[in-house]
Length: 353
Image 1: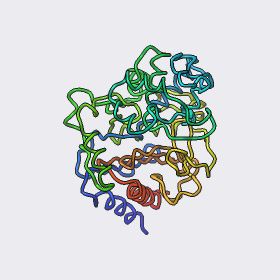
Image 2: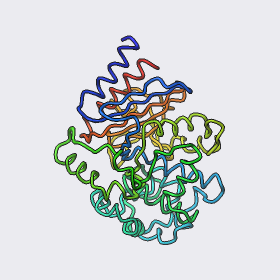
Image 3: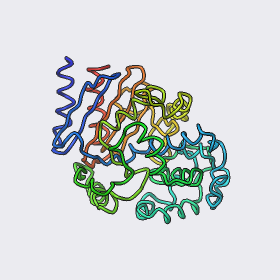
């Protein structure tokens, strides 16, 4: 397949689903692909879980400043979190999805019902009882991840997670189109969610996340909105060891710590029941036993990024010096979404790999 055909294939896949999409690919300082489907380049997309790295990086930033010890129990900084027997859960356990308490209420649906209320979500996290001993297994913290880490940021820094990420990461990097929740006056730029596949579950999710109250809510693990260019710049900063355009926001060793593998290649995530290689805030390539991931069918093990409910995905490949961002507004079933995002990633890798 020729390079031109590979690019056409990726764009045809993006355009063939009758929704909005942005595909942005960068190598070094060169933008290789900057394409829009049914939207403007500055459209704000809901990232879902692809926004999780932002909160994780805020915690790593606090550790770099010496304000938080990642191996200390969470209750060192937040005494009430010890409720339910979580006194030995460390900050690092949460970063690695290994706290043993992947949900706060006992179910994903229960967490979702209260996620627009910060205080209720924090109270639920305090009461949560672990299903596994701290550190024993990886079990994806779908919503609790952002609330636990976000509350830690508030307790340690005195700033809410939105203010901390904005002042310490986003503004220095020039990421003015990345927001935790949607700020007033920017609603017209949002890509509304549409259902592509997945039946009733996808319909319910799209209706719920299209509600203005949900879009505006600070849900660190689910309601980050951003443009493709902003997401790409964040990943470019990571590839450059914490600096970009002469601006340093993280030390190289901090970036390395955030990307250090914390699971074995064949280890199954206990909540999602599929093999996932986790770092401390990112997903990694090379998960054995996976036919496809949002990073493609055979991503390099050093590739890092995060999938957002197969609606949005972003990754960076250090060996290829490649940054990839694919944002859509289509809510899908897991199988359909996994195959589609893998196919788009594969088409890009065939050309630029």
